[in-house]
Image 1 (cartoon, rainbow, N blue to C red):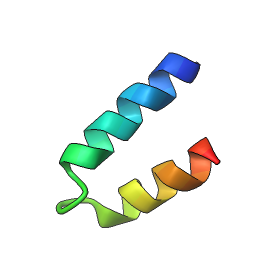
Image 2: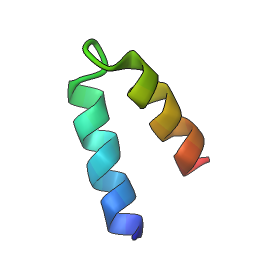
Image 3: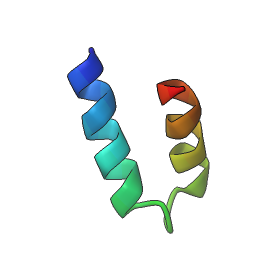
Length: 31
């Protein structure tokens, strides 16, 4: 599960310009 979070973070990082909401949500999930 932790590995999945890291992968999601990487994906969101590349698509932060396309999905800023997901990027912010990912940071909240990690926290």
